[in-house]
Length: 433
Ligand code: URA
Ligand code: CA
Image 1 (tube, rainbow, N blue to C red):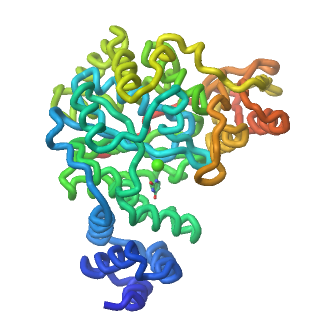
Image 2 (tube, helix red, strand yellow):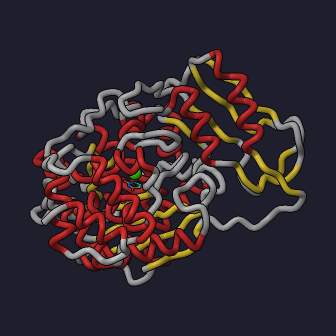
């Protein structure tokens, strides 16, 4: 087999066979096909697309390019969730303890933040001592003991994705539904969980800019998940504003803890309960999502979910006194208010823009490996649907970078869009299973 024939076939819009896709992935990972040839194939895929079978084989051989984690010897139903690039999205830190407290096993490998999106690993490292580098045995032991562990994905899981994602990024071929689906699902399926909920964001700050493309991506991922015998469901959610009220690292951990106490952000609570009740139902713990929802709310009110969060922190070496006393988290020393210059109902807060501002304040990375200021970030006092009067406080920023303050304040003001009347806001747009 010759790689140039594979490029030619896709260029002519013909479907690739299982053998051709296997050849591509195996030899690319071995370093036997140069990036320039794979770039050409990616562009041909971008224009001519992959069908469901091709996408399935691509995902399959991406998984087989590395290690998989077998969780069958961990007792209980293992659940996982993935969200596509959120801003102010700390659902994992709320959902995980909730799932552990209802008796499901929350097994999660997370990533770091890049660009305008935050990463769960960075947020967890805001808790002093928290160790995200567990080996497979430690990961499973913690799951067995406390039903929850959140760790960093090792380099041995889907190495093909590391190579392909970097190349897609450099060749502007990220936004293809087959390439996105195979990239995300290969990593999820390599970890042997039983049920998976995908939170697909739609809006200006998301990969999917409109509802139709979000539905297309969701349907493909759910179908693919089923082909791998994984119980998969997608929920399309609104990213017309950052999800929670906090954007950053320490500041989002504080918000997650508050949400587990029954305070915190309304949206974060709603999505966490929604995904949680879906997972409980998929796992067969309940007969309806309504029933599941009641149980989850009880776990918040009784404090059991927060206890689970503490248990995870302790088992992973973190200082759990921070969970009891959130004033121990130190935010960055420069604090500046953002004051509204207009009046009206908030109809949108550009999530992409807020994510970029947060990054520039020190909370995010321009490139892999950049250092973070875990105390930097933004707290939004006004969210979509709220009435704002000129002179009201919209937000507070936290940073150590004095020279970023003025620009950040201006950009946040501009990220707020207003209307004269209050418009209906739907956080959960559609469910696909
Ligand atoms: N996240 C991923 O991991 N891969 C994609 O292709 C897009 C988002
Ligand atoms: Ca991701």
